[in-house]
Amino acid sequence: EAQVTQNPRYLITVTGKKLTVTCSQNMNHEYMSWYRQDPGLGLRQIYYSMNVEVTDKGDVPEGYKVSRKEKRNFPLILESPSPNQTSLYFCATRREDEQYFGPGTRLTVT
Amino acid sequence: RKEVEQDPGPFNVPEGATVAFNCTYSNSASQSFFWYRQDCRKEPKLLMSVYSSGNEDGRFTAQLNRASQYISLLIRDSKLSDSATYLCVVKVGGSYIPTFGRGTSLIVHP
Image 1 (tube, rainbow over the protein chains, first blue to last red):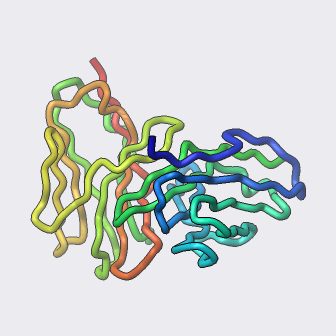
Image 2 (spheres, each protein chain N blue to C red):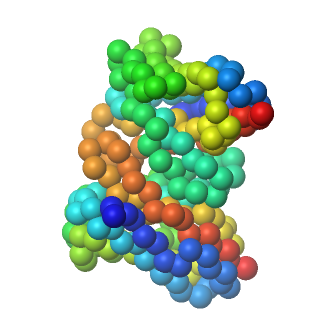
C-alpha cells in the first residue's frame, strides 16, 4: 500500500528539548515537504526537498531543520522547541502536482 | 492581504442541497489550482485539480476564473459524508511552494 508514515503521531515535550519527527514514504517520490497547520492560519510549508541531499526553505523555516540522506526519509528536527511550535505537522510527498500527506503529528511544547 | 482567501464558513446545508465555495487568489502568476478535502483531525487529500476549462467529477464541479482570480467548487446532491473542510490550493508557475487557503467548513445535516 502506497503511504506516507510519520512518527510519533502525538508528542508532548518541554521547551528546549531537542526532538525529531520522522517521515517515510514508499512511493519512490523525489519531492517531499513538511507543513504545519495552525487554527486560522491554514497549512504553511516549512521545508521541502526536491531529491536526496537537496533541501530548501518554505514559508516558515525558522526553528526547524531537515535532512534528506535517503530518498524515502525526510525527518524534521526541532533543535530547541518553543511553545510557538505547538502545532499539527504534516509530511507530504508529491507526484506531478498531487500531494500525498502523512497522517500528521500533533506536537505540544510546554 | 492573504494570497489565498476562503470563507471559513461553516456552510450548514441539508442533505441533497447544492452548495458552492469560492476561493480568491492575489497572485496573477498563479498557474495551478486544486481543491483538497480534509476531514477532522486527518490529513488533506486531493479532491480535484482545477483546469482552465473547468472540470467535473461526479457531483463535484470546479471552475477557474482567471479574469477575476478565483476558483470555485460546486457540490450537488450533498451527502452526509461530504462534511469536511475544503482547502483551496494555488501554485505559481515554477514555484515549489503551494499556498493553501485556510479552508471552508461544510456541514451536511440530515
